[in-house]
Length: 137
Length: 225
Image 1 (cartoon, rainbow over the protein chains, first blue to last red):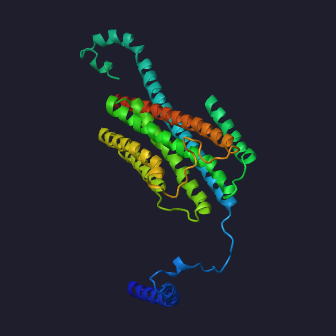
Image 2 (image 1 turned 30 degrees about the vertical axis):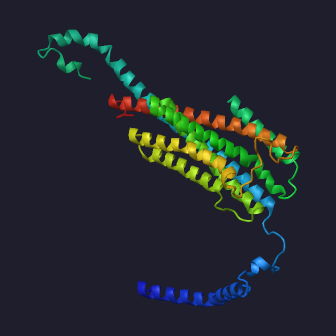
């Protein structure tokens, strides 16, 4: 079943409203906490006393895992950069090889054209156009 | 090649000193081991940015391709080390401060510096190598010098959360931790020199190939290649 844009937007709005309603008790509890902490002299609860937290008393994040993540990042970044440098070098080497091949081809073409010139010259001189056609590569 | 081998061996020796010799820090525990690569990375970042800024200034003055290559190398290498600093720092901070990130003066100015040199590289990469783009990028790199100073002195001036362990007077580093730290600093000096030299050399070769390519295209050599 395909929903139109309007019906999709309406269902999204309904879902959003339900979520907001569900979160409302949490927000009201937070506001109540803040208001309840204000003393007669204007200070808040945080300034006049400490309340014990509920839940795990120890730090949940492992220092060893954070250290492993840090060193792994260093190695990944350094190795990645060295890999990039290698790619750059190989790309340049390929480009250089392409240029060399192009130049070699041109040199071979020129070399194969040169020996035939002296032989053709006398014959070209005998032609009516002065050998202009022969000189063109 | 010799420098690369020496640097690789030094990296292995630094790891041995960090994990085998240096003691675990009393309050933060094992996560403090991040310090031995975090601080040298920050130092390498400064070196890269300094090379970029000085080379950019020299390029503006001399207009030589050699300085342009060193400027690109400095920006790239500096940015790599900046990324290391900006990733390892928050991972350490999560344990030390309880949060990954806080808008501390040193952290903020380091991020700003990283964004500046990232902008430099984007400009160089997308600008097509034109003279105007190079001039603008060079000016941006020169702005990196005051920002690097700002990063360094921000801790003293504004007293953020970032610790100031390494000072001119030796700071608060335990004597047992010093060999690992100073050896790591030496290792990163070799590493940054190696990366800068390799990148600048690759850029010089690329410049030479581009010149050859242009020359070959003008002579009509590239049509059948």
